[in-house]
Length: 168
Length: 104
Image (tube, rainbow over the protein chains, first blue to last red):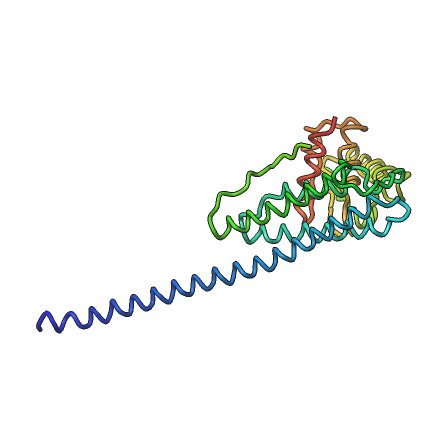
């Protein structure tokens, strides 16, 4: 048996290995792309919900307690759904496991004088009222952290620090 | 060891509201004084089930749980041993322990 006749099956085997490896690589890339698209779409939905909760919160604090009983329940229910959604992402994608920014967001909205009967309606001025400013800052912080987590999940960027303190 | 489970939704209300009695029918103060404190005084371990409500506000949670230290003078170390939480939302549990540890 000559050396030439042996090299034909080897060439064929290497060819098959390359085809299979190529298929695995392409399949992996497709899975990553699909997973990224799914997460992006889910995240867009979450960010929309965060904005909605923020808008409701700003409306809540600029109206008197007797006008906002129903709105208070809506905020708590929306917030609960939102937290559950973000925690669900964290169970699948490890970059989203940190819940501190969610807790800070939750606190800025339903802490303080939320559902307190003698609360006074605030004037709508996000740049001067400390509470309204905090709500806006915590909203932006949460969205930023979710976006960075998204990037770090797929682009291996350095993750955001666990706790970001806002000073105001 | 005596243990007791309190479900906020079933034993208190699905619509907990506010901090104090004046804020509504189901405030944090009422939950603390009428359910939580008697259970903690009577039992070795009290498990609070946080699921089933239509949402829990931070003001309700702070008053109900930080009030144990602030008003009823429970020791934080005792609460760590006696108080447990169940529920699907981890953020609530984390925050409640923060309230307790920050309470004076």
